[in-house]
Image (cartoon, rainbow, N blue to C red; front, side, top):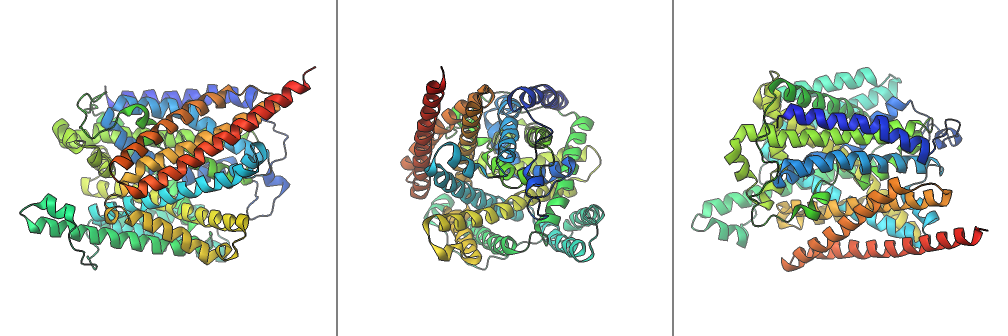
Length: 584
């Protein structure tokens, strides 16, 4: 199978899904009304509620949901072979993920721009809102911890990426000040910022930066046992731990500051620049695939799995946590995008189309790791890289970076520059998600404080400290950050669980309207079954490995899931009884 053929099949499926399936849902199921007054018009305030051109809103929504997860998940999942990952990315996006994003955007716009948690309260019951808030808190907790570890590892592996990443923050602040102080448009300054970013990427190869190990950590017992008679190897492993811990601490200090700054100063201009960067990255990878047309060297189905690799069924469906379907998208769709929707029919373009964009990013990750990276290291090197589940998880981003570098070489970009470019892409997307997630987590902490009458956590600074502190403890509590990628399975399970519960809310709403609900009920049932099964598998593994922290967090999430499903079942019974009693 050639990479070009797989790219064409995937993109063709996405286009067909948009032109046929989403149109059917828009007309027959959601029944979009062009005359419906959206919350952006009803509550227009120029701050949160603002009618926005659908193309501009698409860019905002796309860059908000397209983080590093659609890159990392598929890059891990190809350990089972490229075919299962490809099928879940394509079919999952068309029939589940895009329906979820489209639906959560639509239902929120139909309910004054309320979030999916508030909608759960009105459709399921009073306790559902708090349960949703707690699930969202746990999801954001793991998102922030995992992405901080990913960024730290990429900084250590690609010191040339440090200059462009941190330099781009300074440029973004300058763009924010320029726009806010002078009232200039954002397009030209953001394009100029993008040009500066690429110049910094070029200079990054000549100015690599490695964070000194200022902590002087001693080797752990595991590192000494692994090193055996070579104390130098144990000391070097401890030095890497010190560097990783340093980067994680720096990142959380930065996110604390970024999450309390005005959004116009850093987040908005940087997100707009990253939006351009995302499209450029997709273009470069796609052009590289077409120009080189590398064969997919990795196996379609890997029949020589390492002993520690779990079964792909059901773990595939939570390992690819984004790029097929993601509960985090529902938070964005019902949190910000619904408040900017100009016309209700735009929800199809923004919601369904935005999910297809992330599916395309996940597709490029599969191609980069099974064709580009496999071509770079050879089939023996590929099997060595994916020689264990732990290695596949910790080395997923590097497989993507090296794979993109090979593909970019095909269109004339030097390998060293292309590798820094790919690392900056992953770090930028992860950092964008990190900033947004910490800010959202601060809101959740404050909202829980209001719910339970705890006033001191409603303070912005206290709520931010709780959010950042809890994430840092989780990230550093797993082998000094080295074991942070063990959180990926738990993050994926929680993320997909939230998506399944959001589809459940959508299903209940469609039933209340007396409409056909199979388009949401089928993926909901599939997803809740897979995530529940995967959570049980993960909990058994965590307990057997004496992973107390993971067992505690996973157990709490599992209890919340069962509680919410019980509440939803009761709500469904009430709804069916009410419908039966009203039937003559």
